[in-house]
Amino acid sequence: MKKLGRVLVVDDEENIREVLSNYLESMNYEVHTAEDGQDALDKYRKGDFDLIISDLLMPNIDGLELLKRIRNIDKEVIFLMITGYPSIETAVDAIKKGAYDYITKPFHMEDVKLRIERAFEKRSLKERLKTVQGLMWALLFSIPLWLILGIILAAII
View 1: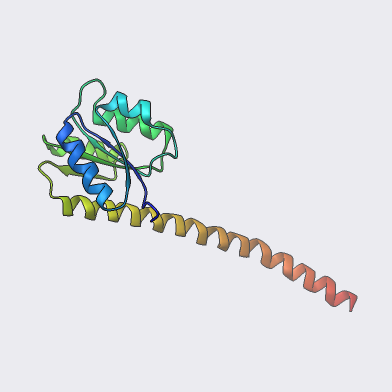
View 2: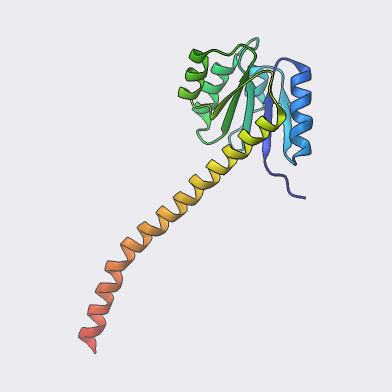
């Protein structure tokens, strides 16, 4: 069975990494883990992951700095921030820096699943919109060409 996507789970708490990765694997995602932001950056390569779930507070490189650095590499990867120390300021900051969503600990796995599904659905809709826009531009450019060809053929006949 084809995997739904590749996920990088970043958290300094081993039990959180394990619970999330087991749950995501049961949902048919390919899951990799990192114990902090630096470990995540070492493992991250553009295009390798569809989703990153990262804790906010970690040693070495925290979640916001990781988000900033990942966004410099890849604007398309879905980034979910999780934290046990929620505040409005950090939530707003995470969203401004490019996080798709912000999840507070303790979290319910169904809530995590719903947010992941929504994120992938939004990405899919964006890709479809780009395709439709490309087709519209192609049609707009091809209509004058067909008109010119029609005029030339009418003149010849």
